[in-house]
Image (cartoon, rainbow, N blue to C red; front, side):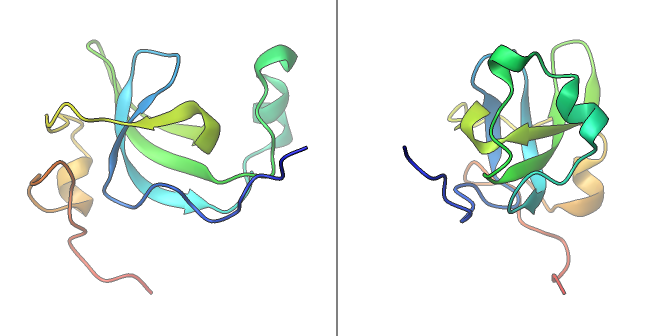
Length: 110
């Protein structure tokens, strides 16, 4: 049995896509393992529920129809290679101009 790494594979400002669902987003925070509510976790169908013991990412996410904040396990993300910026309105509050396929942070981290 493979034990998932707690080292995040993706970085703040990186644009990613969901492996199965039609949305993409920019990462604005990372939890080294699941840190959401039990209710949220239990709402995921058991046959597709991800392991808690892996990084989970907070994304400014978007589809063709809407913008929202998503919480996604590492196993369900893949890099986005479209080279296209996001239109999510909150992205510009936290990040600088999109360049080279990613967003730089506007401020230092504590």
